[in-house]
Image (cartoon, rainbow, N blue to C red; front, side, top):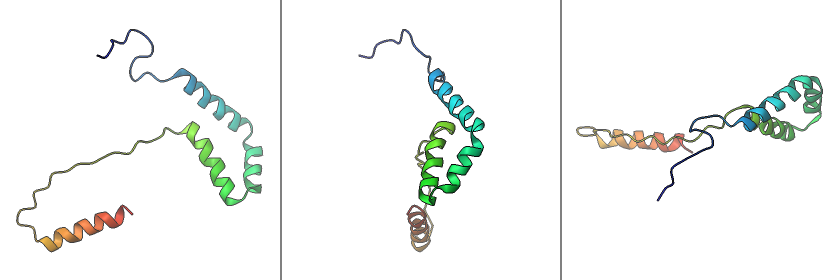
Length: 94
């Protein structure tokens, strides 16, 4: 049986420590942007992308994958057209 929630953050309330960490990282970057840009310029492309990607984790919200379910009435539609549509969907998801 699930217990009733009696304290802590309410659902949807932002985590203060996460917000504080994001703000601190943003401030550090703003105060050192020229140094960071110089460091980026000296890095290999692979390291440069990895560095930027690591910082983005703290400044941008992480998006979750979304599932889409559809019901489509295919009565009267030629099967070859349906096959082409499915092939296109599969090719786009590779």
